[in-house]
Length: 276
Image (cartoon, rainbow, N blue to C red; front, side, top):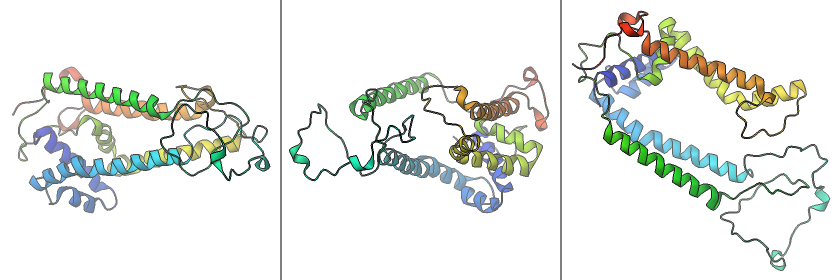
């Protein structure tokens, strides 16, 4: 919807993008012009309904392919070698037809790859089909039903029609960008480029940081799947919670404690948004 919130949200977001190296080029690609207008509306529409879903679908496909190819997400608790089947005992089956299968299920797909072989029985695993897939479909249908009911009962929170001449004061981005806008209000380059870049890099390096810490400290931590705050990963959990709480705090400050000219005000002194 081309209302005041959407228009000035795009305006603020593209101004933040302009701060980064090469930001002018990125801003030009997003807007298709020097200013926010009809061309930007078309480009953002195509971006959200076509380009982003296509890219997301590709990466989800790659993700699931790698899970199947690499033998799943889990790893054995002990891979030191004591419980591993010796390579000499892993003979090659030349004629599999002579073996009668005792399986009461069918394989959906067989993918070439390696899997850890341990000398212990696995009795706590279930198959993706139909156990997992059916449950995911049920959850998907329920979520879509709830969203449909909510969209019918509650109207979209529209503000007045977009007006480039009379901006809202302050012009705020949507709530999910308000934390970034709050950071930019302190320092453009630091809040708009350096800190988000460091956080994105930290997110990408997190698996390797964990491996490095285990190697450096000589730790040998087993699987703790299904545990939210395992004491074995106190460092990782503390770091994540600190970043998460800081992000939520910046969003709250930008949403409830910023008034005209981005001055700090108390929430009960903020004007009620909406209208023309």
